[in-house]
Structure formats: C-alpha cells, structure tokens
Length: 152
Image 1: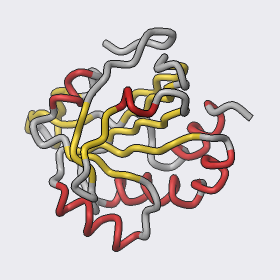
Image 2 (image 1 turned 180 degrees about the horizontal axis):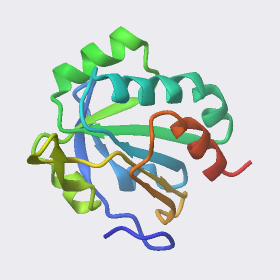
Image 3 (image 1 turned 180 degrees about the vertical axis):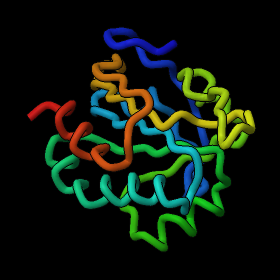
C-alpha cells in the first residue's frame, strides 16, 4: 500500500501519444497521479474535466498531471480530444500500476462483484515522495482536493 511520506513506486506506461512515461524521469517536478476507472463515463468525465478546468492553476504551482486507467492508448486519444484534456493519460490495461498503488480492488456493482480501479489520487513531490494519498475520491470535488494538496 502506498503511504504518505514514503517513496512513490516507480513505473513506466504508454501515454496517449504512444510515448513511454516513467515516473522517475519526472524527478524535480510535483506529480498529480490520478487513477480513474474508465474513459468517457459520467464520473470519470466529470473528474477529468474538473482537472482540465483547474489545469492553469495546477501548472502555476509547478505540477504535472498524469491520469491512469485500464483503457487503451487509442481510447485515451479519443477521450482527450472529445473533452480537450491538456494533460497526459496513461494506459494500464494489465492494471499493474493500479495494483502497485493499491487501487485495483474488488467492487460490488448492483450485487455483482468485479475488479476495478478505486478512484484515487496521489500527489508526489519532486523527490518522489507521496505527500498526499487520496483514496475513493469523488469526481465532484476532485480538483479542489488536488489544489489543496499542492504547494502555493
């Protein structure tokens, strides 16, 4: 389980541009790493658009936003274009990074159990340490929580 005050686990995933993104290559920058269940669903769209709308302020505070879901790179491209998302989306189809961060969990949807991502966000400082871990966040106040966790 990823904890505040501990080193964030390093990972490498394919982005919506097809490039590989490695967390350790972002040392020196604050990273907002958010996990969401699926592209273009109501809650995930609301969450992504709230970050889009707050993106200017997030950037002013020196942070990079990375969104992670099990969707494919192609799905991410469509989602980004449809909602004009200015940040990078990472494909985790095998949910390896979601498992590494402890957000791949059993869910109970209308009596049917399945595995999926628990909507969660980790703010990681320039030294690679988790300064804020937010599990089970609501799309409604997600951007506000992220801004409250960032310096400045």
